[in-house]
Amino acid sequence: MGQKVNPIGLRIGINKDWSSHWYVEPREYAKTLHEDLAIRRRLLDLPETKGADISEIEIIRHPQRVTIVIHSARPGVLIGTKGVNIDKIGAEIQKITQRKLQIKIKEIKKIDTNSQIVAQNIARQLENRQSFRRSMKSAIQNALKAGAQGCKVRLSGRLGGADMSRTEELKEGRIPLHTLRADIDYGFAEADTTFGKIGVKVWIYQGMVYAQDKNEDAGQLAKRARREPAGEARGEHREGGQERHERRERGERGERRATPRPEADRAEGEARS
Image 1 (cartoon, rainbow, N blue to C red):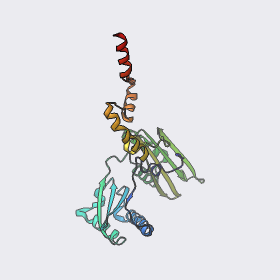
Image 2: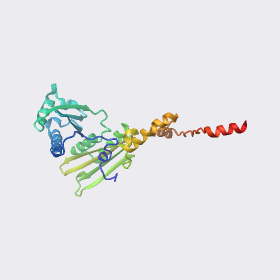
Image 3: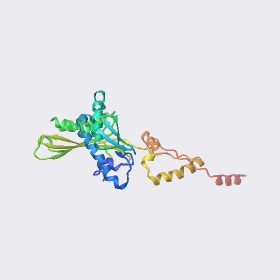
Image 4: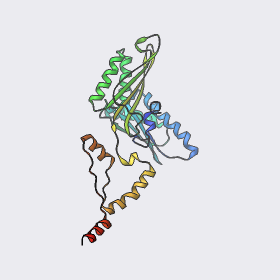
């Protein structure tokens, strides 16, 4: 299943978070969901957001207002001169939602390891008639240089203007799609060429996430909470997943600790006396 399903949806609640944060009554759920979709669609279609390299749009709903967080690689394009563009964007979104609106912009620091930005850049290069193999190779090399441990790019469509559509894929490094604690970013974009649409998919693996609270479900957390106080009272030390992983990378072996046996020691002392 890891090869088929969306990597972000598979890891929701483990090391990925939802794009929308709100709670409504069941009868209002469909209306609110369609409003979120309309906001995202409208934001991406506005001329003020063209060329801003938007990676993600978060929507947070409060009782009295709606907060929209836009993750962009070029926040200056969204803000505009003296905030002109951001005012126009707010006016357009205000037509969709009737609540008080607040827009925040977060800058993306590492664009070479953001899969959505990488996919958009490849699609832009294909629209400019650049070689698709060169675009794939350069994107993967830049991602690995920026610190990614693996990258995979897949293109589908009439590549190079061929009469028959096909799929080309290039991969370097590791992409452990079946490992749930693996931090895998996934992005998708479409290139509108003179020969038709070309789909671009990008997977970027950035390492393992060893935060215990995010890797354990409710049952494991409850079991660990019951076990830790008793272990602390006995003075025991339990090695965590991160410590074990670091020790294995250094090639060190764990020390086996002998457990004290007070009854056996007492019996042995009486026998000697």
